Image (cartoon, rainbow, N blue to C red; front, side, top):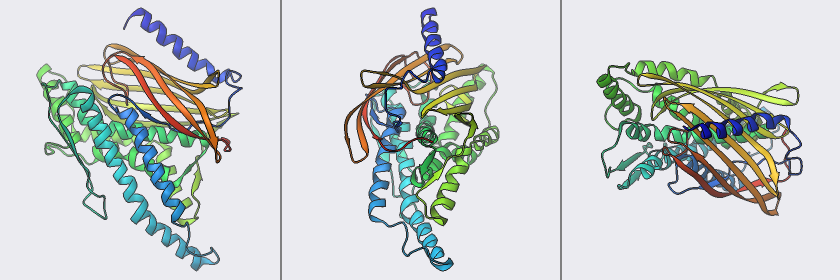
Length: 414
């Protein structure tokens, strides 16, 4: 990374750091936060694909909720409340859960493994996405052909790509819920499936898994190189232990409360997302463990909401072959307003083990308003050096995505 690149990254990070205290910068714009937009890019990377999966899942859930009632009878007396709760539990089991499970698998295969394959190779790609339980055997698979011999980093990226895509989706869902202070039970259930994807996969891994098992393949490829250069190897037991860190995430507990207490028992579509109050600022930390194209990594997200603006200070530390790694990422929304364009920003610097940087801005502008929502055009652009940032291309180059978002015009963040 050049001196000029370091300077650009530092300036960008300083701006993101100072912006929470400069509340007048975006005072002219609406106080309604933009939920996760639908974005597309050239390769439909894990980052773009996660937004498509979220958008499609929300459309399906919205259509279902318009035609499927929340209760069968009036909630008068214990018996009727019990009947309604049993009905909602059956609906969750037979309708909602199968949908969210299938979207998790589709995102994992098509935009996770598939996204990395489209970026790195020009070979054929195919998918198998059977019906989820209880209507089918569930699961999924990606079939592909390399058009050139892959590097170790490329194989690791493909193996971890499915879990990466669902990690990005979970992160987007968490941001929406944290900013709004509440979330819909379907978003909560979707978050549980996406966030738990990595935990489930790693915790279920044993020694000598069959070829085609994402974590088993990851361990074999990593250890082959580690043995060759005389460095420390990974073990399934060690990964299972490290994955326990991901349970230090309050959003997982909130997802269960929203689903089973708020929705099933109380009959409420939305539930609160509690946070620590620091004056006018709300704060919520989250910890995660995941696999990357260079090795393993622990992530601590420190999320803040102030004046309906979202900020995230992300600290990562990990291990690659023969070296420790670290990165620092900052993200902020509604940092500025320029001629009806609202600007969000994010930046990351890393040492993995080479220096690298990524910075990007997301701009959106309202095109039309109707029925309590505003349709916004969304453009995301930036630049990154070669290296790993979840959801982004591995190589050096420009970041460019376009899309749209529906922004509520009547809801206020608490």
